[in-house]
Amino acid sequence: MSTGQRTMNSQEHPSFVVAPNLPLQAARTTLGVSLFFFLFYLAGHFIFGFTFPTPGDLFQIFLTSFGGVLLGLAFSRVWPLPPKPGFERIVRVFLLMAPALGIGLALHVLLQGPQPERALYLIFALAAWLGSGYIVRVGD
Image 1 (cartoon, one colour):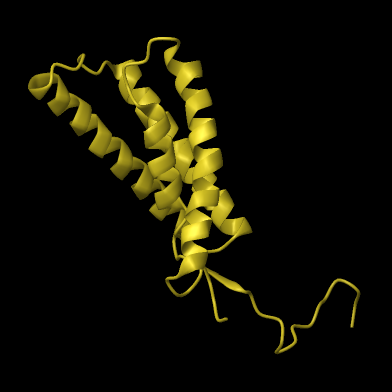
Image 2 (cartoon, helix red, strand yellow):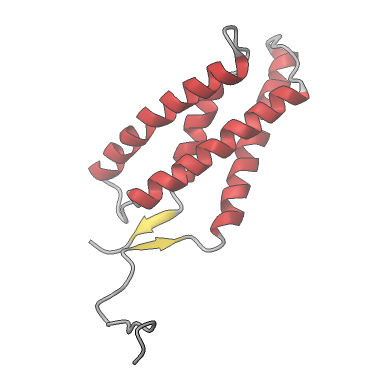
């Protein structure tokens, strides 16, 4: 056997399952979150008197939801979703939300300045939470 070949023992198996078509599902999540908030702010303009969302605002919403989904995927790669609901999932969500809200606030101030009109940090945190469910740990 050459040095470049490895044999796979029956004991070697991944400890997590990645959702099929992960890039496509991440793109769908990004677009779904973005579309929801596009429509929310558009309806908010007519119902609540929010400022009309400009193309720059729409790009910022898309950018923050894309970044949130990427953070969720990275977090899920480090700590995959437990197979059963329970206390571990609750702790996992709280440990994900701390950096998600912090990074979201930093993006919020960076993109919108001192007088923001959109809640980008909440969009980032929601997208991170939704993006963190695509990699699931197997067995326990």
